[in-house]
Image 1 (cartoon, rainbow, N blue to C red):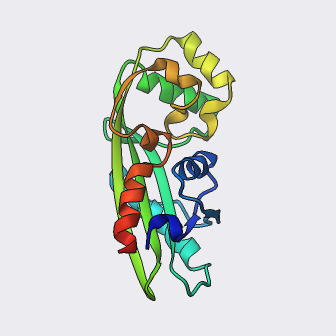
Image 2 (image 1 turned 90 degrees about the vertical axis):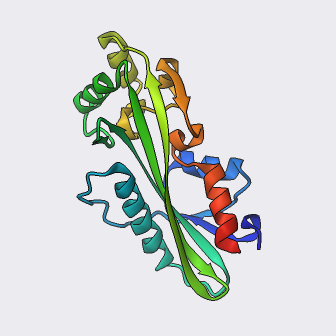
Length: 196
């Protein structure tokens, strides 16, 4: 079976992930996971893999389906010097994160889990994709101006590369779409293995 013909369910309410899958021709349903996201894990790749697995399993358990299907769970964090930067709790927290990222390189880690049923058996695949982002030095005025757009408040590391923050990104290494929130090329390749 081809991934395009498999029933796909995205276990995330992220409009960015939804759009990326649609752009890639991986049409899907959305069932937002209610899984507990409180995981005490210091390693960013291990953390996002655990969280993506929790989300995917939560939605998998909700699906009563005899035909083949796959749930896609995903989680993204920004990591700098081994510290994980999640979504900011306040504007002051967003400013703190942006000051940390200013003039430096950081990692964006996205964990993805495919959890479904293929040929009558339960299947699970989990992986982590890592991209590197280089940010130009930011002035206090630029930081506050960006925060005023409201864009940083629902994003890991307090920025969205696909939005106004792109003007401060000098270059990247790795998958751009991973930084947006889902490494769609890797997801497609993993789905092909998942379906085989």
